[in-house]
Length: 96
Image 1 (cartoon, rainbow, N blue to C red):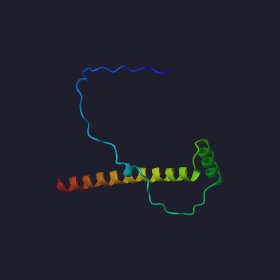
Image 2 (spheres, helix red, strand yellow):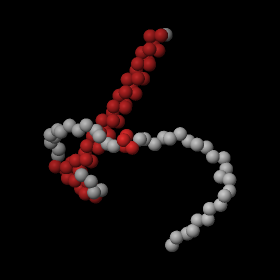
Image 3 (tube, helix red, strand yellow):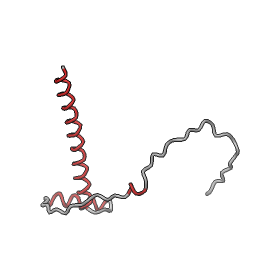
Image 4 (cartoon, helix red, strand yellow):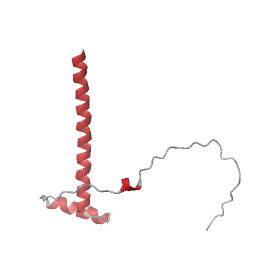
């Protein structure tokens, strides 16, 4: 069932133009450099990821890779923030 929209020539009110915040299309292309590694995982872990991958219609290796990337990203940010905090403490102590 379609509804006909009736447009009128009424004022739209107080409008505001917002800056373009969307990334460029070429920035959306995922091109992370991959490195091939050999790793021995437990049978239980592989079966878990294979089952989850099948449920979500994706590849289990991709799920493992994304998990490892998220882990590395999380711990890289924490270490960077901690290092920055420690540097500022040292600077404050030295200035006192």
